Amino acid sequence: MLDGDGLNCLGNGRIVFLDGNAKMALQMSTLSLISDLPLSIVIPFIIISVVLVFTRLYTQLQYNRSIKQYLSSPPLEKESLQPQILQLPQLPYTIPFLGNALRFLVPVPGAFWKYLIKTHPLVTGACSLLVGPQRMHILFSPHAINAFLKDRNLNRDAVNRTLAVTVFENTPEDSERYWKDEHAHEILLKEYIVKTERVNELTSNFVHFLNETLAVDLAKPPIQNVNFYQWLHSHMFTASTTALMGTELLRMYPDFRTDYAKFDREVPSFFFQMPRLLIRNAYARRKKILDKLTAWNSAMLAQCGGEAADPQGEAWEPVFGSRVNRARQKYYAEKGMEMRSRAGMDLGWIFALSSNSITAAGWMLMHILNPDDESGLKRRIMDELHSAKNDDGSLHIATLISLPLLQSIWQEVIHFFFASFDGWLIELGLTAV
Image (cartoon, rainbow, N blue to C red; front, side):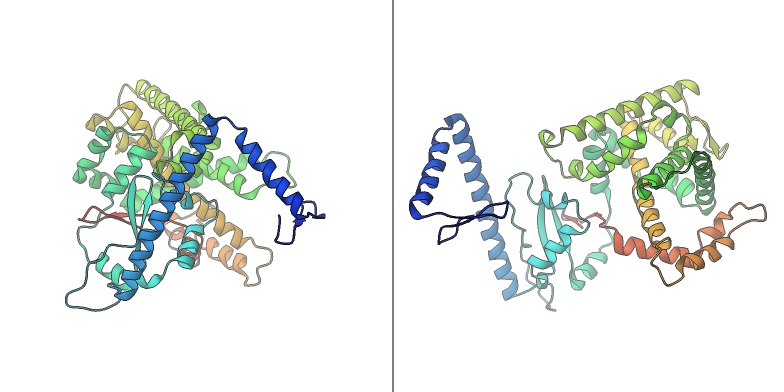
């Protein structure tokens, strides 16, 4: 890098001194190189540069003006009988259409929130950002959050519909069919997800299949070094998918776990509607997953005569697995959903079950098994787990999921190690996170 005295520091640590003539020659050679480029390259480059610079300057000026207005009269921090309505500061961005989406795609947990806290004056209480085609709003003022939570009309409908279409590739029509009948959907959730006996039943099946996959692994020759999280992800995903969907899915699609692990990291790119050109591999992977799930669903329906088994029957069966999955398959059929959209909903269901639970289990185990821990956490959690064992050595699920120390670890992990993204729809049509 050249400084004012002609000092050039090369990447290999050597220092070369250049006089004024040498610096001039270097600049002239650079200009000559640029001038030799064909206009078909130079003109698009100039146009793109102008658009990016203009977008950044314009959004930065708009942001500065909003901040100045807020700082002169912050509406969310002052109690007033007639509060002033101001437009939220829109965070500046450089790339049109993508907006602030790229900041969410940085592979560092909490990177966006650290950037926001460092650069944005929190006295405003809220800010706005453009994530692909969607405008969203972040609230961090106690006054704003209290006012927000008093709204009795809050719901996640807009977020759910967006996820169904943009991430899991439902058609808009099928997404509407699925979510429109709120009463029927609520009954399905209450009957097969909320009820304690159903939760215990699903957990018991998961533990059973986890024991099976661990037994197979333990029968193999020992491995000296292993990537702990990949090992855990493999076993938990296999057990949870089998408990939820039955045995045939992983038999027909043995690469599902590997493909899903990559898809899981690509979900934000789909949600923020990144251009296909930038994430072609992600689009190809999603197509493969949905093709396989569609083929599995068609094969299973053919195997059981065109209709999933009664969810009120057995707790689990190998074709469609759990009660809740069989109930969902019937719900798809009742709503007249296309097979491709059913596959998308199945993928969304697996995503909802696996993404948080496997990650949380990984963090929990890494803390419990930490060899440098001096608090005796491992000993205390093992003592607590022994209290949930039946006389035959099996686990008493109702006791297991109510253990206070285990629940405490779970809550702390969720609180400290998850960069969650959630949203609600407000009457004005805004999405808040």
